[in-house]
Length: 298
Image 1 (tube, rainbow, N blue to C red):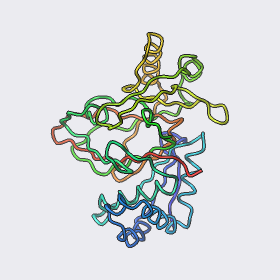
Image 2 (cartoon, rainbow, N blue to C red):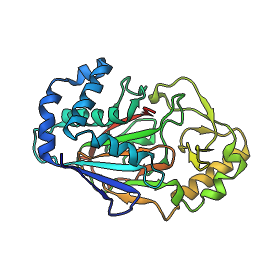
Image 3 (cartoon, rainbow, N blue to C red):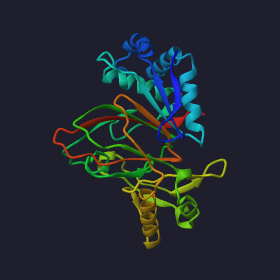
Image 4 (cartoon, rainbow, N blue to C red):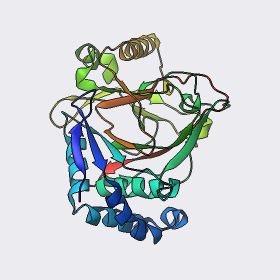
């Protein structure tokens, strides 16, 4: 067991876990027991997979990730496996991401794909109804799960593969580092119920209502927000959302960095916002991502 934990070069709030190739080698055999289909059809097999990951790292990996994610001072971890040859293919990355997810909690059903996870591409040409796949448009800071009834405690994103990519860096912001937190979290409008819908590609037919800002058990602000999905019911709500959007995007405390291919970023969804910078135009551009969202076991 040889993983290391260090602070990210851009911020001490993000912790980076490096996994050595020899430990990944020890996962090849237990991973072979599970096909992608069996993981999709048999939920209990995902727990078996997670147990295999936990055993390789002597029970310390999942424990470390859960501790980081629940610590308000940190809350984001990047797992960087030492993948340098073809024996660690995309199926391996799906299984590793699944194992990490089931060490920290129960993933939500992803209506967009009808599975416990979603895989999707960002490409040069796009006809989707969401900013998620629009390569040359800024993906503004947001949290996940704003439009569903299920709780979304955490988010996992794995960069499966990319080619023809320049720019498109990850952008994240810790709520406590945001210059306008006190102003906007204490604004009574931000504590009103907003109606949240979603585009057809999300396969959610209902709408939900909730405020942008709430308080956690310690009385600290949490946020649930994405720019595309709220449906303001009056001028007051509309202008509040515009102010919120402007203040988030203009923040000087955003952290921008490239996520290495094969790496997984895990974030607490209540006090971290995430987004993506536009890519440089390229007809060969392609990036594949895997997403898992869910709740903590406790």
